[in-house]
Amino acid sequence: MKNSASKITLILSVLALAGAFFVPAASAQDDAAAKKAKREAANLKKYDKNGNGKLDEDEIAQMKKDQAEAKAKKEAEKNKK
Image (tube, rainbow, N blue to C red; front, side):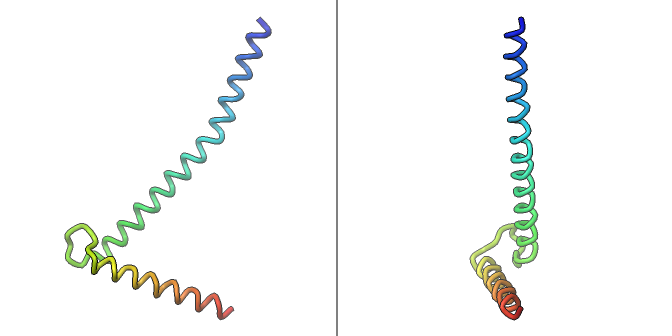
């Protein structure tokens, strides 16, 4: 009996440790997916000028241009310090 109890305790301990590592990783993935969806929705709202529910080539080009300008501005501010 003691041997069986030790095996069960070991198995439960391993499962508990696995759960401790898996749950935060899954939660981080959910957070990242939620942030990405929020960012995409904001980009769609801002750049979808014709209101068709998707970004066309010219709208994507404008978004990329704005992102490049923002990045350049951020780098310039960083270099001033």
